[in-house]
Amino acid sequence: MKFLKNINKLNGCKAAILTNQSAFGFNGKYHFQTYAEIFDLKTIFLPEHGLFAELQDQVSGDELKYLFGDMQIVNLYGKEEKSLVPPRESLTGVDVIIVDIKDVGSRYYTFLTTAYYILLEISRLKKETGKAPIFLVIDSPNPIGKKVEGTPLQKEFESFVGVTSVLHRHGLTPGGLLSYYNETFHLKVDVVVVPVGVFHPKSISQFEWVPPSPNIPTQSTCLVYPGMCLLEGTNLSEGRGTTKPFETFGAPYLVGKAKEELDKRMDSHQSDDFRLRALRFLPTFHKYTGTICEGYQLMVLKPKQFHSLYFILYFLKQLGELFPKEFEYLKGVYEFRSDRPAIELLAGDSVLLDYLYGKLSESALSEYLDQSERHWMKLTKPYRY
Image (cartoon, rainbow, N blue to C red):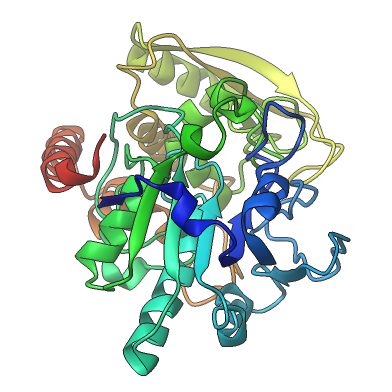
């Protein structure tokens, strides 16, 4: 991985940028506004949710309009899957592609997948023409640190919510993960990583939490997201439409004797790492809008020990046993894919799916997770800093 020592060399270069509101400066300006004073900034690439995180998940940004001088706005989350790939003309005629956007530490989170698709297209451009822009990553800390969770995504499950070989909780910074992609997949792009403090010594987003998308309101949301995002593939509410998405979850059908047994099982499964608080909630949008849900608030007590993915895998397995008629995995289109259920794209691993369907023991799951996580830590050691 390359680090830039002399940023003055880039002054005046023609540039494009992938960014959003998560990159915000102490001077009251968004980072892209500061770059416009350093570079000849031609294009802003919009990720999912828009430049200011205006849009909910899986909502096209085609209708978004912004006025920033003569800068071109290229939406990379439209109504069709082909919109995810940057148009070739947006990559030619520029010297630098800047990536300055917050990640939340989970492979499902689409911002760095969008950056990966840009990286792939730059690689293709370089192979075809022999020329390509520098890929400049403005690096920021991983909000949930270097701890990892999960198993490598298997090729057959690759999608916009998961790149092959990456764990559910990867433990890397944006610069580390994008450098991993570049070298592991032999893309041969000139990737350069710069700590955010080099360009923005007093960037507020280094110290204060700026929500990168509508349903990651706090840093604590990031701690549970590596596991709780699997709820998107089920008929449980993941808490969208509440003030604590992914920390609040449930469904109207969690009642009766089966719910009492579920409470017992989850109570016996609890440790000092987390607590479940039983509650009722009413989503104001998304699943079960305007309907009272019975559920829980997940409270993480020891972030360094808590394993969000293992928690939700265990929980979903219990639901399958106790609510066989009510609980279900959703079908239909999810992040442009309709050939596989969302739970398969999110779990990304046939072994984990076997566990959910009752074909794998608790001990086998624990051993498999441990081995996968140890291997990933060794594999990604060069990209951790």
